[in-house]
Image (tube, rainbow, N blue to C red; front, side, top):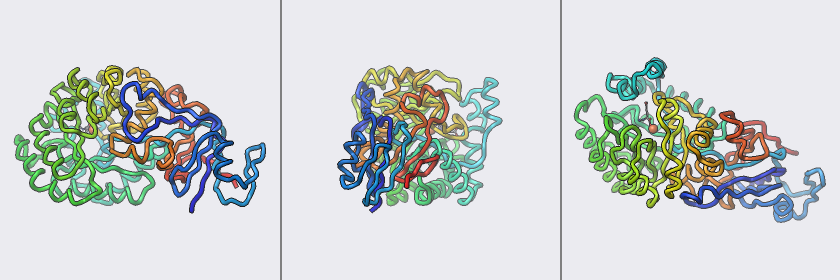
Length: 433
Ligand code: NIG
Ligand code: FE
């Protein structure tokens, strides 16, 4: 058995629970000062003040005043250096598998052309679709792997990844397979989503209904036997898929056993949030333009409101109304939306800062939104997202003693050491003899 103890922790800061925290519950962060965490085979088995944990876990060892443990019990010790430990971050909305980049579009947007105008002129998602259709599996794998390395280095220990840059059967399947391979080969955990309804495939141009028929009849029945594909998502938007098309696809997917997600009310308030709540989606994402009724319906549902502030930032749009949503009782998660178009950044420090400074979330709410509620947005809150007995030891040792530095050290990477399943996977890590 693999035994590890993390000692010399200034402060453990974590939300608690196995489900999403709603409304004012998001503000309740548990703090344990002068703490330690004990891990067996990658699972948290004990935590508390250091004295208590050492006494319970290795009563036969001698604990010296300078913090060393002498004795015979074979426990690997990680020294947190009197710094804060928080749960690993969960980025519950990414489009991280794609080929090609779109810097020209980015510059055109800076000069005033809108995201939808570029899309209607044949750019946007379809230009990434062309590049991704032309990319072989190895190339997509290598690109994905290096992006995962960047994510791990900033403390992201679980992500959700979407297909959606192939739209035809073969390329979508290739993207999904690459994510399965990366989930197996890298340290990060990946929750996989089929997003065939990201845009209407060229082959069905002008006939979104037939494209929906194709996905229901020919794609979903093949994917449903692959347990690695957990979610089906759709870009429900004026210029994307309308409410009826989204409903038809997601209802069919739900019947086949998939969990559901929606890109909802990003640009125009068309009732996406309402539909997501009615369909029992695990998450409704974006919500920049969500209506008051939509917010109320989300607050009464189990659907996590996943907000993507870097997209609003990169598009120069007003932010989703996190304050209103939390005050209404919604469960809010923050995620990146990392993609080559509307948001080419996977920066947790940036969206944490935007959450606090622009969206008026408290430091506690930001921490909860980046961890437990992110985990709930991919149905994994029973396993990850908080530092509690029985959960995976996915942890970040910060460079500072206090978790609020996550925001205060604005838009900087405050993570020193990343621990995944009890092992150091990025950063310094002071392993003791
Ligand atoms: O979530 N709008 C849909 N999908 C992405 C953008 C994808 C792209 O531009 O390539 C989003 O913002
Ligand atoms: Fe997205």
